[in-house]
Length: 192
Image 1: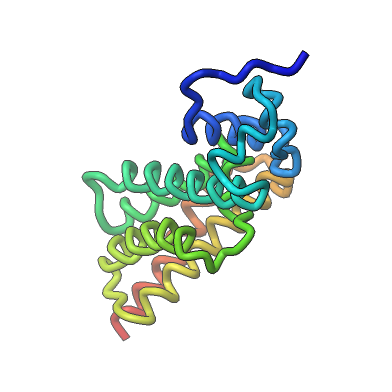
Image 2: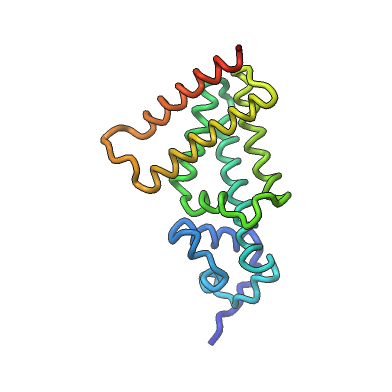
């Protein structure tokens, strides 16, 4: 007997279910068959919401980027300077910790050059540029700063997820020290 479709199933419910699969089992398990099974529907019903697996991955990437942006933006409220950079950075790393599959989805878009994916990512870049403005970074230098910050945060998150930090040191303290060293360098760049 085939599963009965759920009435009122919308794209957000589908993406939540796909994100749950990604977080619990990894992005490789986010397939149309697995998603349909979790939702209790037939796989062809998913085509009403996106175009196959590439369409699902694109929507999931945008959804994940939007979630990450929301966490970072919330962390930035009421803080500035170093405190703001540390707050958004901690939000970024905590998102990767809490949602490892959704974090992976943010990097897994079938076409990272896609306009919708670019627009979603631009919000994070704009937020980061505004926060790094306290370090007098303008134009291309600000974008280099955003790249540096993202490299630190992604590298830290990826190493942590793969069990790369085995020493008995507090991970959040390590992240804070790394970020403060980066910011000291960016501050020198911004005023030179």
